[in-house]
Image 1: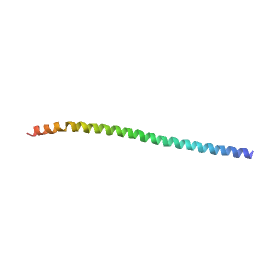
Image 2: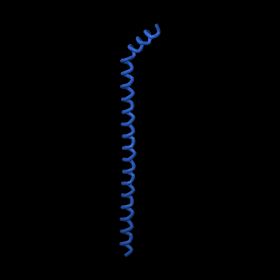
Image 3: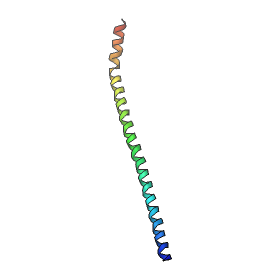
Image 4: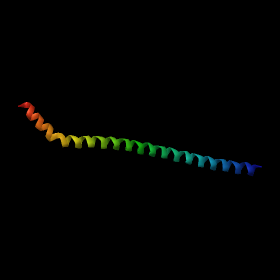
Length: 72
């Protein structure tokens, strides 16, 4: 009987450690997925502002010319 209890206790400890390991894996995966989502969001904004900057650079000569004409 004592051997059976010890064996069950060992199995329980082993199963508990496996469970904790799986929980840690899930937590790490959640962190990675959050950072990946955040990076995608930030790169989206970076692209948006970069395109706006490019449009402004394309219009800059026209705006400068318009400013000169208005100041005359």
